[in-house]
Length: 217
Image 1 (cartoon, rainbow, N blue to C red):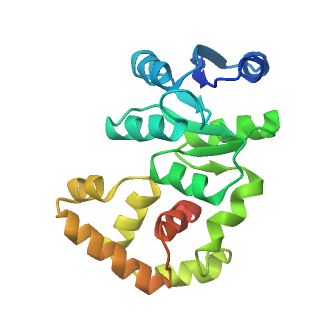
Image 2 (image 1 turned 180 degrees about the vertical axis):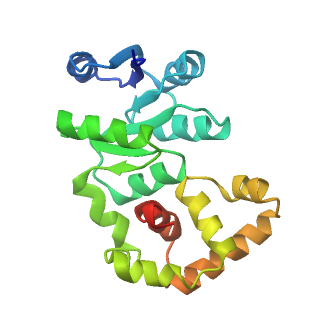
């Protein structure tokens, strides 16, 4: 018998929070292990309860959902942070992905989309609401064409490809350096060379390219 997926929910709007709890509890295999109405309480509870998924609002009293995700990333928590927000904004999406968020949903998402997101992140992938997916390709030159992207990736050395693969797992340059037994500066140089070879410019564009194309790496 498979173990239920433990989900923690943090949102300061009680009506929305309770509604989300009810619809998820109807789904077989999911268990709500805790809730919180503010970010500080949420972080403490997530660390203690160790849920599989933490569904977080961005704007809450105390820590924001993105700040919680960042702290979970820093302590290398196994919990997958998923943002569920009203902010349909590229800036928030980029900040979330950069700080360890593996799923980004809007509050008008369907139950099917929420379940798809949970399954995707638990399988090591990423999930972004369809309304926001155009932001993932806006900073990348060829990411919408998988064949061209594959050709571009052939220009990378095995080491550069490894850096990009680790980046697609949302690892920081510091974490990548540690895993590859190289210096932080070496990783930064690799990132610069990769961006040049792929024709990518702009803040966070390489990270977003890596996430978008992680299945090709």
